[in-house]
Each structure stands twice: as C-alpha cells, then as structure tokens.
Image (cartoon, rainbow over all chains, first blue to last red):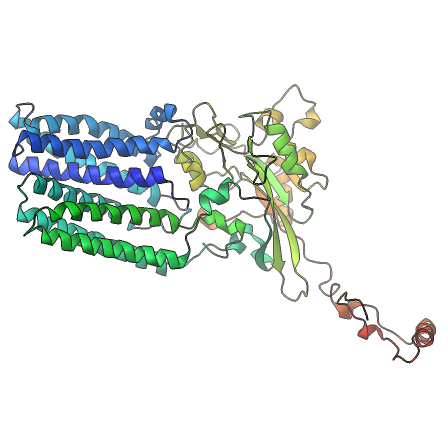
Length: 309
Length: 265
C-alpha cells in the first residue's frame, strides 16, 4: 500500500495527542488540578495541538477537503466516519477539561467527570482509527487481530513519553511516570514484534488462480498488463517495500523503542533525557507507521501478477 | 446512504465470456468514449501525450498465460476487468460520506461525484481494483453499468446496452438481469459454468465470468500431431522428389522436421 505522508503524520500525531490526552484525563481524575497553570496549559496545547495538526493533515490527502464535513454522516457502517464523529465529539470535553484542569477556569468538581469523558473519547477515537485498517479484508497484514491493539499502545506509549518530557521540562517528573512510560514502550515493542510474527507466519490464502478463476484450467501467470505505464490501482495498492529494506526498518523501530526505554530510565537521574526519549519514541512511531503501509499487500495485486496475497 | 439496501430482486450485471474474448480493447475504448461524456464525466487523463501517460479507465483488459496440464504450449486468456456490482460491496459500506451507494432497484453500485471527498478508502476496500481515482476531479470513478444508456429513452431500444457490450465484436460481453434465473444471461451462466472472482472473500459479485472451453484436442499443438508418412504412392513420390532435390543429404522424414523455426544454414 502506498504510504501517504499525510496519513502517516495524522495517525502518529493524533495517536500521540490522544494518548497524552487520556493520560492527562487520568491524572486529573487522580490528582485534581494541574501543578501549575503554565504546565496545564502547555500540556493541553501539546495534546490538542497534535490532535488538531493530525486531523488537519488527514484532510490534505482528500480530493475535496472542503467536503470533509460530509464524512460525519455514515457512522452506521463506516469506521472512517465513526472516527470523524468521535474525534469531533472528543474536542469539546477535552478543551473544557483543559480549561478546568489547568486552573484557567475554577471548577474543581468538574475535573474528574470531564477527565473521564476525555479518556473514554480519546481511546475510542484511536480504536476507530485502528478499525479503519483492521476491517479491510482486502489487506491481509491489516486484517489482523493485533492491528487495533498496536494502534492503541503506540498512542499511549508516545503520549506517556510526551507527558514525561513535559513534566521533566517543568521540573516535576515523578519516578512513577518514568516506569509507566517504560512499561508502555516495552508493551509497544512486544505487541509490534508479535504483530510482525503474526503477519509473517500467516498463510497467503488468496492466489492468482482464485482471483482470475483460471485455476480450473491450469497454472496462471501475468502475460500482459492493460496499460503502458502504471495506473492508479498499481501506484496506490501495488506499492511494496523491498523485503530487505523492510527488515532493516523493522530493526530500526526495535532499536528506537529500546533506545527510548533506555533514555527514559536515564531520566531518573537526568530528567531532561525524557525529552530525548519522547522524540525517539515518536521517530519509532513514524517509521513503524510507514512500514505498516509499505509492507501491506493488497489482494488486487493478484490481478497484476502476484502469485498469492 | 452507505448502509446496503435489502437485496434487490433485479441484479443487473455483465457476463464475460473468456472463451471468445480476443483482447481487442474495443470495450475499453468504447467505455472511455461514452463515459468521458456521461455520468461523472469527464474521465480525465494525465499527461496523455507525454512520456508517462496515465488516466482513469473503468474497464481494463488483462492478459493471462495459463499452463494447462498435458499441453505443450501455454494458453493466452484475455481478461476484461471492471466493477462486478457486488451484492456485499465493502466499497459502499466503508464510504464515510454516503457518496458510494448501491441502488435498491437494480443493484448498480455508483459514486455520487457531487459528494465524494476523494478519501480513496473505497478503492482500498475493493479486491477487484474496480475503482480508479480521478486526479483532476479529486473524486473516485467507477463503472456505472452505463446507467445513462440502459434507461435512456432517447436511444433506440437496441442501443440501451452498456457501451462495452454494444462495442464487443465477438459477442463476449453479455448484459442482463442475473437476479432472474430465466434471463438469457442467467441461462448462459448455468449452461457454461459461469463463476465468481475471489468467491471466498464473500463480496458476492453479480458479474460472472464464463471459463475458456477445453481445447478440442489436446494433442493438436504438439509436433507429433503433424502428418506422418504412411507409405502411400504420394509419399513415395514425395520421397523420390526429396531425394532428387537434396543430393548428398539424407532424405527428410516428417518426424525429423525442425519445428523450432530456426533457418537452416
């Protein structure tokens, strides 16, 4: 699948933003108001900023961005529409939570319910993002039970790393947050490794013989393509990264996640290492998301000569 | 509305005969010609006269090579591919705007070019590569089954057929109601063993493909099928002429004939 940069940016940025929002919501529920207005405002700007930037970038790959509002209408059947609806629904409570939690608006009793609402809506939004991909039966690597958990855990671990970085910058990084970030990053690594193992071992059950139905007379191969230069179907769905590059990039993701864990642990003695850890975790997320697209083979490639998909 | 309508009794679609298709591209060019001025027009091309042309086509003809058991030579099968107007079209249900829809009255799958946002998700959901994004218009395009021909009262009744069916010079494309078991197309499918593409994916395509017929005689394409000398008067006459013409060389025998196509010398 062609890795559209706007979609990669959207899913990683908004994932981290929603992860951060969910953790801020939990913090508000357990600790009440933010330690200072400045920290509260900064954290909310980073969280909502990433979410907004992500949502805006997702409209860049549309043919008609001015019609994007129409995408809110088909929530009954479309996960893309559901994602849009929940993202819009989450915005109000999240903004309101930011105001009361940071202390800009004095209403301590509202922190817990608004925080809870923000947590739930943030998690549901990322869940819907994952479902857009995992519900496509045409792409074996996405139509996988681990797709949604990986989306969720990447959002949470990059969000936790960002929260650790922010608290470090404000000089109040608690050791608990370091351990939580490390735990989530390790869980991300474990789930991603399990995902790769799963897609590598799953049999390619669809064949060129079944796609063309010509298996009934013999073994099928592509003889001639119906055009002289690549068409939309090939450039959008036929994009594939070379296996050796994929292996290298997978190693890069593993390395970056391990490095992020190491840097995060280093933050116990030098808190600012958490900033570096967050940046490295975000790089891991972007490379992982790029691979998620580039490694995925679409069933339609069978009509263009692929033996199995 | 992207929720699917309850299955219609009428299921309009195409039946494509892979035995008679000669791969002439008349259906593809006729489709392009009609649909670039019809519903959701135009069908744009990019860099049409340049070195790397591309464009939106609703019908494309692939060529496949099939190795049949017991055949020395491979068989070429021309394979037109367009929207199959599935009964369970995931391209419709994933659409976030309702621009993609399946018509309740006849099962035709269409895209409304006025409301499509060009997110391309429908093309990801289609296993058959039936949908092509139009870069210039920023919307998705697909086969309309020539909805603007088949119900068009301004056309002669004979012309109320999809452009591809009308154009096919070998009669390899058939149009009709596959929901009616007594229709000509349904009869054809039953008689010839028409089949679905990727049936295991569960999209329930309406369009059917008729398999190539078995070769009349599997041995006709082999060298040993060439006529052999049977010792008749004619054979003896030819053997004598051969000896006369090829002085100093051993006379040729049918079994020794070089079929490789290489020139002697």
